[in-house]
Length: 88
Image (cartoon, rainbow, N blue to C red; front, side, top):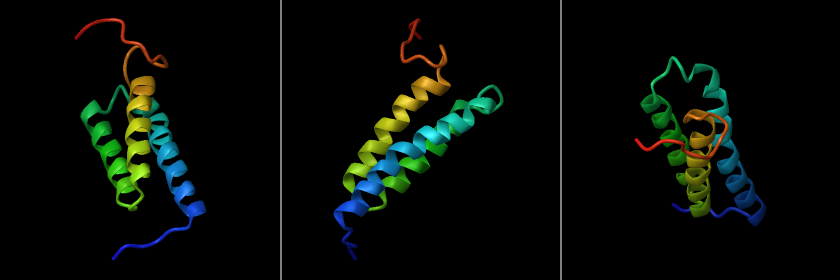
């Protein structure tokens, strides 16, 4: 069964899908030394899947892009930068 959302509701869902991964990554900053990266990545996957499950295609896309950018910014060294200084 497909639920039809108003344009305003769809916009709110997409905006939330962009904000929630950023908030999750920011909340994980104090714990990044104690929690494995894979655990945080799985948490972000749950956020992206939840956004995609709303049925708004752009919500899943925006959540995935936001999660990727915020992961690089908050949880990857050098912290608070979107650059990578060394090859792995």
